[in-house]
Amino acid sequence: MALTDDLLAAYRAALRAVDGAVAVDRALRCRPVPGEAIAILAVGKAAAAMSRGALGVLGERVSRGLVVCPRGYAGDLDAENIRVLESSHPVPDASSVVAGEAATAFMAALRPGEHLLVLISGGTSSLLELPVAGVSVEALSALNGQLLAEGYDIATMNGVRKALSRIKGGRLGRWLDGRPATLLAISDVPGNALHVIGSGPLHPDPEPGRLPPELARRVRDLAGGRPNPAPKPNDPCLAGVESHVVADNDTALTAAARQLREAGYRVDCPGPFLTGEVGDVAGHLAGVLTGPSAGDAVLVWGGEPTVQLPDRPGRGGRMHALA
Image (cartoon, rainbow, N blue to C red):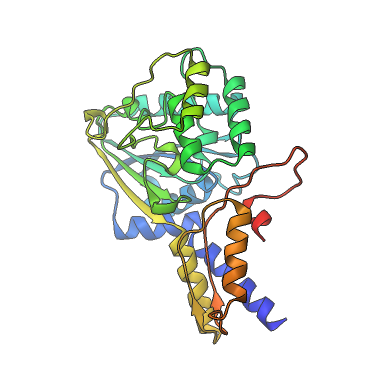
């Protein structure tokens, strides 16, 4: 049981290190946000926790806020000037559009001298949406469900979502219109690319439009061939945005490894970020664990495989399937 307890302690240490409140508190103390009036827009599974961290540091400087999180994720967030909207995850629905409309209105209403603090975490792509003209949220939801079942990775999924959205791929920046903003992100994607995290609401793709041919065809068919241009990375509407990743997979791995070393174990983090089809990833890990170089170290990995769902899928997520 000692090993099991130590592994669970390492897991809990990893979770604490990437806790939204902890990560934002740490970031804001290292890089203070300018201004005396700060408006908070937080979206994602960690939105409520990240907002709590911001409120703890900024206090009365927070003029107002909008928090968009999955149903049941708001926790004990209760501030008079913070509006909480619960939305849909992992597939968008009508509540995602309500949240998208609220977010654009929130940004359009920024007052002179008010600094926007944007807090982004995993789940943002589904929680916040405004489909392009002619595409219903029902059609968008159906396509998202199909892509999830077909096992596409997050970057490809988000590429499709951007092509059909009025707020993804930097398009939300049109409501910012060059005003100052600080974006803090908890990354759930390999490489921490800001245009991938949450489908990059304030970060256009460096090279947009590169979808696999079959997915590009499905996007064109759904959108009726209508173009959906995105801002360029140097667009003036995004000129006031400063962005930082405040926690990621490496943050969690480092904390887990530290906890294990303090408990007396030899630890190795072989890397890299685990991606690929779940069966292939499982085979790779099994080969390492049973191979001649395994030794007596505790091996720590992180990442997210893809899973192609059967006709009658069970319960659990991608890492559950890997285990």
